[in-house]
Image: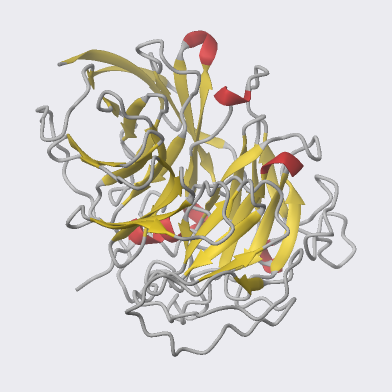
Length: 482
């Protein structure tokens, strides 16, 4: 059943507008449909020849058998397993780790019209209990920098990181506040005027908050003492023209829970300075009085719309990137979405805290429930450019691979040697799958073909499962062709 729903949004000139829409009030089972209006599709402006190289990343990554670096903070990748795919070719050379050297930490739109080869190779992982974020070169595994994410210098509780197509990262602190860091020194700011960029050089060089000149801006957000309600959904878009290379106009969606008024509060910020461009309030966020969490995950679709999910359970919400009108659906009964991602065709994927995955089709407005019989809990999720969904699995710990076209479970028992509780998933520029493990204090790098793994050590309770490399945004801004 769908009933009238009143929303509130704010236009760029600051005028608040009330509008009438519709809201789903009953859980939609697999195969059920709910009729509703459809919008015209809006294609991305940039073409394959002009788009950022992350968006046009190669679809078949080179294979890595193991690493060669010793373990330790910022030491790079170390081998953790032989891999589980016995049919794969393992003849490729081993990873050559050059400690301290970045393998192209820059952005995706290079000089010469953005047509240079892809050099983007940074992942940003929050060290939640330490209140920091690590900037890691995904090719070498070297930690290039570590930053405090808020003014408490340790107690801001960072979790979600989102990376734009220039490599810069936004970090949302569940204790309040959003902060942006530059991936390259050329975009850092010499605030003290000494002619050099004073910034972190590695894991053991964390500057007091506000003194690191690669911190570009920080925006406070309301706090009420309960971090379950603090900022979580965090996702970049590709600007009003949906141009992957026009990074200067990319915007950032963030959201949190105004618990006193039961409102899911979302803001779209300027990527340049963090100022608020738009506000959307989703009324009656906890419609059934059944959750202690506010908005939990967020992602952008190919049309530039923002999707946010709740938890335990919570609604699935779409905010139109142009009109700011929102629609909402209730997830099937018994399901509890955790991570969220969007595939190249615009389907919404959610890993399920209660096990398995959910796929939502915006056209038919139906949910598909995909069971993972050997994994009882899904956490973070990300889609790669070959059409596979990758999920961090718990109970037992490991990785899960699902074909997004056939909805078939390829493997739900992928081993991560020594794992404890992997929570997040991301895809790097070469197609490798990254899984930060909160309790093991490591991040795994998984070969998607052989299942061989390496790992980065020295992290502190790494708890990130959003678009921590920018691959999710790249996938929908310029999906694979052919």
